[in-house]
Picture 1 (tube, one colour):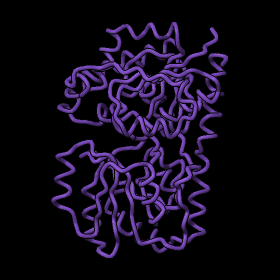
Picture 2 (spheres, rainbow, N blue to C red):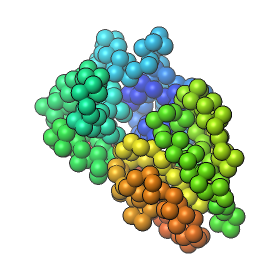
Picture 3 (cartoon, helix red, strand yellow):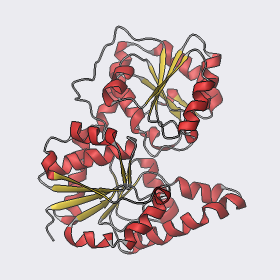
Picture 4 (spheres, rainbow, N blue to C red):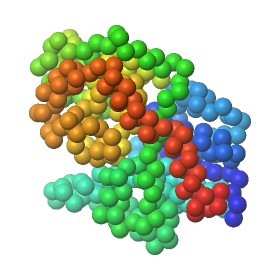
Length: 365
């Protein structure tokens, strides 16, 4: 069947994280290739609408279908997935080529499923009995869904070599293709100044307890001459207020910044720090930092292995202090250009080419 319309399913577009930006750029790429696109979601806000309109030129070819659900259901993407099934969204596959943009938590049938990480499987196999019992319902739902994908030979997208190996290790998935998320480098408001860089360490993230932001406070107290900036979307207001109340003097919190403000911050620093204790399937925010000439400091697991230089990777957070000191000393305009060159390997242009190649292979688009 020759498809003219493509549906992208992502239940939560209320934040502008890596998966949300990848979904927007996927819509952009498909529209530029001549397709009509329908983004199906349950949560979307003004910041997301603004990002969509900033990035997509032919907005008339984009439809956004918002399935309004009671807030109690929106708490869990897995619950939302089952409600979508109840609403018979599977019928979409007769009208659209459907791409499930977040197969990690959305057990929704599609022609193509994008997985970003397999942390649930790590927690299940490496956790204690109580943890296994707690996540067992989610694990069993995913198990049924992923086995169905494997049996039906549905093409699978993953976002790094690390996630590619996980897809095989945990589930023996076939038809798996690496599709690196895109980092955009041609925004008119992306200033590239090399002469006025401060000893500044920047982190762009959600304000949420799972992001390891307390580690940054510990580093700030040990490195009082370094300015640390944490910026991003306030996903948990109480947590943000707690961070604000305990903030060291050399830490600046920047909540709910715009894309323009984000790049203005990145243009002033030397180091990008990713403090999360969890494995990043890819880490698009790190690439964006490198795009602006910052040296990335991240742990030595996950998708970051595809692009973070080994001398700036840490095995445990106790090593981070010395690596940050080294990175601040190492930074030069020339090294900033090297970081930017690495980031350019993950351009929007490459993403668009690879996405269309994969779609054409399986669905003759």
